[in-house]
Structure formats: C-alpha cells, structure tokens
Image (cartoon, rainbow, N blue to C red; front, side):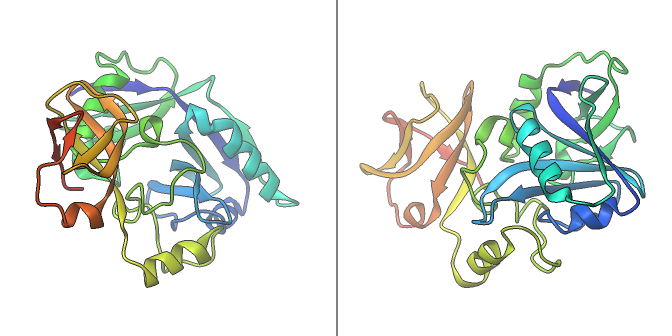
Length: 257
C-alpha cells in the first residue's frame, strides 16, 4: 500500500463545547471520525479547507495545507471570543499520512472520494513513507479531485468552484455558518458555470495557460503535474463548443468530476 507524508498544518481544538463552536463556523456538519469542510469569508470564498479528525468528544484535530495554517488558526482564535476552547498548533509533533491503492483499515477513508484512500494523523515518524507528496498528487489528479494544496490559494474561489459541494464538503441544510447566505443563494438560484476539472495534456503546458476551443477561452490551468493538470473550466462555454479543447495548440481531454 503506497504511503506518503503530506506537509500539513495540524491545529488542535480542545474544550467541552468544541463541536458546537466549530459547527457554527464551517461549511459542513461534523460527522463520523473524519469530516471535510472549509471556513469561508462572509462573501462566501474559501479561506481554508481542511479535514476534521475526531479524537474525542472534546478534542478535534484540523489538518490544512501549510500555506493556510496561520490564517486558519488566527481566524479560529478570533471567533473563539470567550468560549473555553484551547487552540494550539501541534504540527511540530504530529504528521498527516495518506494511504492508497491497497487494503487495510489504517486511518479513515477520505470523504471526498473513496478511491483517494485513507488519511491518518499520528505522531511524527510513525511511518516511513516510500512515496512522495508528488506521487499522491498524481494519484488524486487521476481521480479529478481538486486539492487546495496545489490548485488554489486562500480567498480565491467559491466552494462550488472547487467542487466542495460534490465532494461531501458542504451541507446546505445545516445551521448557519460564515458565508452561508452567499453560498446558499448561489446554490438555489444560479447554475454552476465554473468547476475544477482534471485535464489530460498532450503537449507542454504550465500553470496559467489557457484552455481554448476554436479560439475562445473556456478555462485556465491552475496546476500541472507531468501530463495531467487541474483547471478551472467554464462549463457553459465548454458545453457550446464544437471543437476539441486545446492548450497551446495541443489537444487536451477534460475529465469528468
């Protein structure tokens, strides 16, 4: 079974009412041992997405890309007010491991896609990974699953842009959360025009390159790994296109989400 260690920030939240505290802020209800969710701006854009690992009823661990770690911890502390919640960065002592393409019950199944494998937070040095984060990146790209580690920065995209509503990351029926009004209105009243999709490449390409059909831009690459990338695609424009999409004149295949 391939194992990789991902460079992630790990934030510990402890307190008697920690579940209620977090549930009132994030896009998803906490359920089971592993939940995928995000903290949004009041305008509905993703500040940070993360996984919530349940350690106990009064203890949660959040793992998020390193680039989001400080801003996520600061926001949580800002919203804490007088709540008796202890918030601590424990990244120096703990690590995030991912396992895929094998059998076993180590960790918890990634709620975004069952074929992504399992995730586990453990003490640093618990495992000696034989694979790199880049290997895992290739694996998740093959499943057309967006991942903020590589595909977007903070406060750039709405949850639907990054397919969070399709990846068990948003619960539109839960109680209030920050940015809910904007996100729910977009869900109810508008057709989603933009989605992230993996793109199979047939020629040289790099982040920022446009995807064109008949001279019209239908998307742009946000990340490239060898012969596959992740792009934000205008689905409405793509649906009307008759020609084959191309990047730098080379045909590409846009994968389904």
